[in-house]
Image (cartoon, rainbow, N blue to C red; front, side):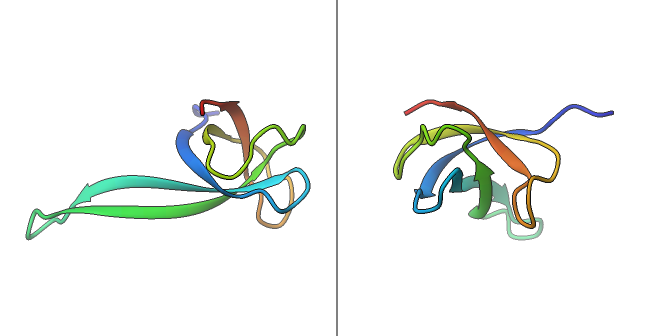
Length: 79
């Protein structure tokens, strides 16, 4: 099996129990015009002990499917 992906992002919502919405921002260069663009993606992340809150910077890791939308879990809270 391959290596698990790790991303860093900011917690957008902590309204659900044991689930966080984390937004991960990355920069990409346009293939033709070479302008640098910011791309954002939201991930539903499992937080077993409810340690993170809105505005926290967190590290997330890929995991097995935990629910319909959750495929990631919190590795650590960086803040």
